[in-house]
Length: 202
Image 1 (cartoon, helix red, strand yellow):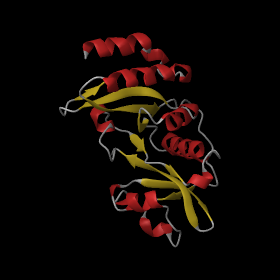
Image 2: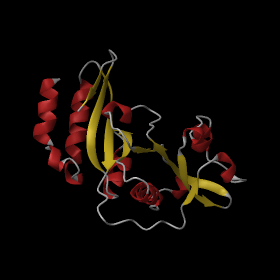
Image 3: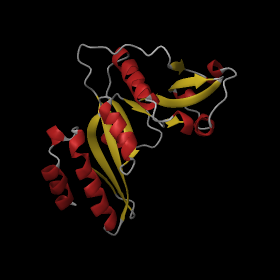
């Protein structure tokens, strides 16, 4: 695995890992790694931490919910129904959403010092936000809603602590990763899970 670390550091220097034009190299590494015996999956960790002095304006069309009762009579898409069973609200998580015709059609979560999948915890970050899972109904995709949700959670983070805001995606989910990079996120880490229950953080 030392060879792997050297390969990534050589092909994608740390200072250039947020460069979208080099993302195909990560995909190349992914294909090579998955061809090796013992690799279960690879997760890409993206981070937004370039707050500076500029604070993004809030998106007036994005709804923000801090508890279940605030959802009222809005209908939920199937992914959200699943998420609500995981009691994110009870953990202090916040739901960002778009609604149309009394139904939530796109949404994402922002978790505070908590990552549902445990990926961010591996980075041993003291204070952080983690975003997701994000979901957009099929008929509302390719309309920029995912980008606007990303900007909304970054806007919230910039006004509440300016903690690093992380997203975790499987490395083959290229559209989502590209969208996140276009909205200001950069590559932070790769997490490689091996079938023998070993986890590598690069």
